[in-house]
Image (cartoon, rainbow, N blue to C red; front, top):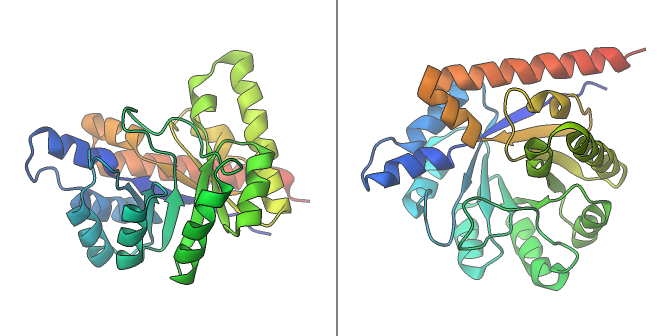
Length: 251
């Protein structure tokens, strides 16, 4: 079976730069369109409670102006549910959110939050929105996602990206095991957080992962070589790695 690998580009931090001057430039929707032209299969945007980067107007424009799937990252709150149901993005990835954090810190505890999360899965699914949970590569969390009826999980790769040496190898092994388990229990498996040109290679080689969501690194690299260039390089690296991995496992 052919194992393709999609790239979702997160444009949150284009909005972060814009908001530093409280103006209109740079425009995250323009960045989204450029990303699609450079090879992105989808666009991811996280609408936070405090609106520190993406704004409500950004979500409205993204919903109306891009022609690839929009993945709305959101906390499990009534406000965010109402926004998702109003715009009906292709997908909604439920993430943990703390006001004081700089970025999403770790995965959602689906096991502990089962009762709270169930109505969100039901409402989003009924509206035709694909629900995913952003979780640690923990088999218990994946099993809980299945029980709640979420069709997708996104594995948090932050600990892997931040580790070195043997610790990184152990974190990679957790991701490999979780991705294999996801397929076994019927979950579509995505991954993301902190991935760079260097760290993406072992992740892209995992055949049961079908989508990577990458943002901060690509926006940072764009400072030096342009956004289109940074995305094209990531796209080519992912494609080459996946092709080599599939070839190595072909009879």
